[in-house]
Image 1 (tube, rainbow, N blue to C red):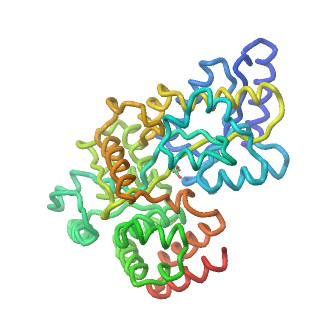
Image 2: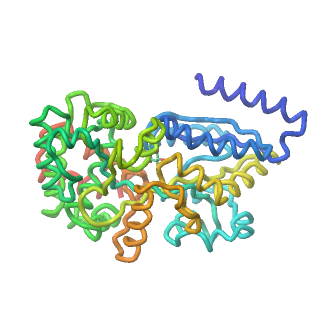
Image 3: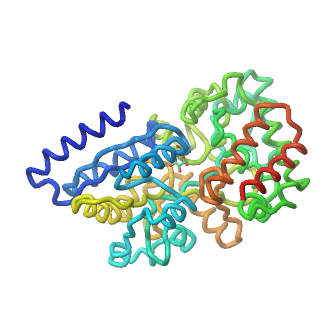
Length: 417
Ligand code: BGC
């Protein structure tokens, strides 16, 4: 309710402004889920840049990490015949909406600015439908990150960030003995699925990840490797505090900041939180890839829904150009914790975690160990992803055996296809 009141008044203000001439660069209503400290700072950069071009920005944030609430709100808006001008959307979701004829393309901007020449091909393919760009990427987020509090590790006598799951478990046992929560986590389905996919990559490797979480291969889903992955997930469950249920991801990050917990497994939007709180990488917090080889890819992008009105259409073109401009890609990603989607933006101003992300990304492309995030909607249709989230969360919150989890998962995936 509150959101619609907000929208109405914002639209009212926009109407008044248009009597003057500030609509020279169009108008956008932007639906996104960036509401934590670091996220709000990053989206604030986009808003300021758009307004600096004379555009009118109407903000429609839908709180809820991972974007599940935002996607529900989007569907309701489209069904009501009132889609937002620009929507944070990703992976196969882009193709699904394009398939329904809901999206405008921004190919004119993409051709004029030569996006093909500056985007990694793997990302460009996700942004296109029928050969035309229908989405503009803002960043590359890595999902398989482990964040650590150096002081907490020192107190428990842990010398380095773990590089295998056995090392992780040994470190976590030491933390438990020292009275420190080993792993900060929020019990929400998308966060449980984030742990799960990082563990699957670490336990099974990239080829196994791809077979199980992208190709949905039944043999992989029921394999011993999947059972072992659930075993490690069960281990992680034992390293949480009793209040993890329902906790937002950024509150889990805050536990690591305060040294209440030693580790968090989360994509590098967590770094955006550390930075927004004034924390210094390498000193106040540590970053390391979660155990295993590979790189779990997540990328945020904006799509442009079919809306009426010249100023809205103009707004879409301006926003698309702005999102892909090198200057914006630098400013935005310095705040968001991610790295630029454009390959030609220098990383001089970025920290070592970002530089590591970039190096590992290039290595993963070369070694064919780059995998798309299932939990963050880069890999499979929403309906199938929903089955993964349900099962993983059910496993996490019960005493289901790993064998039963693997069998149930394979069955549920089969049903959803
Ligand atoms: C998005 C990030 C966001 C995170 C938490 C991810 O799916 O890609 O941009 O910060 O969810 O909300």
